[in-house]
Image 1 (cartoon, rainbow, N blue to C red):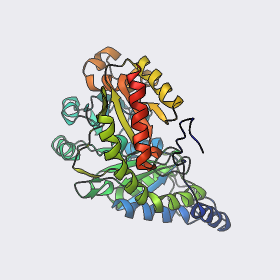
Image 2 (image 1 turned 90 degrees about the vertical axis):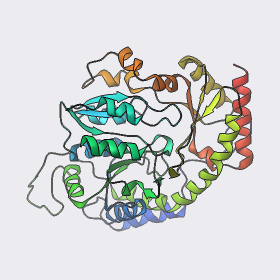
Image 3 (image 1 turned 60 degrees about the vertical axis):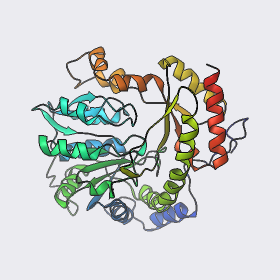
Length: 387
């Protein structure tokens, strides 16, 4: 597929092959298409947990449900507070709000776009029941500082790792960091079945509670409808799991390619006046690079959106960065803090800046060639210079 008149033929996404076809046929022919009768979901959970170093994994319907389920397992309920980054996709806050918990947005670091541990510490109250770092673009948040904050405050962490499949922090995989982690398999994610999600659990007890709650409170072998907890139907189907098994098998090699391309592209972008790429943290030893993220300094939100349109017109799969969660109507529908938009904005200056200046390129660009990294930078340079 040709992306544009520029002739940029970036790799397509999603990627698939005979492995996915074989898996779908295998799921079809086993004759049981839901997880209670088939084997694809169970096998995928084992493979996914092992890949991430987690004791257990639970596959669910999507990444938003993964966050909701993780919060439920930790006992978060109506009236509790959950600290979330102000700059993130809205599911991070809505997962808490849909349980009746109050989402408390805090600022992020302007270089890494990850939650600021100091800001998170300031937001802890006696009602705080969870702190939710988001590993933005695949860059793991400061889990050293956040782990200390969690230990000192006795408030558990929930890693929103929707962007961070295969990431490592100081030698540890996401599932080895001692806290629950939620991941997404939505169509744009680093591995996908169109939709889907998973929760990594640090112990069997929390996994078993998660299993009950993701299956309407019903034990695995129940035949007499003895629902032990409240819950919902967050079960993943066998077809999706078969696709995800194939997707997982090629993830490592794709990460290798993106890890090679980002240093080149980042350096080229950094040389362009006004362009500031997302900065890395060396403690994140493996970054899957869900997004190629950067800012263009001095833009308004409207100007940024116009620039994104120009980049798309030149053949780049470009997107505006997420809006700060408190600048969406959805955030204020229910379970919002007793603050105004401007009060939150005043204590979230970095999130305000990224809200106006942030741009990201689809991660498939980082599966391209070195020559394509140079072409990306040339297009960004030309477009920014024309502002």
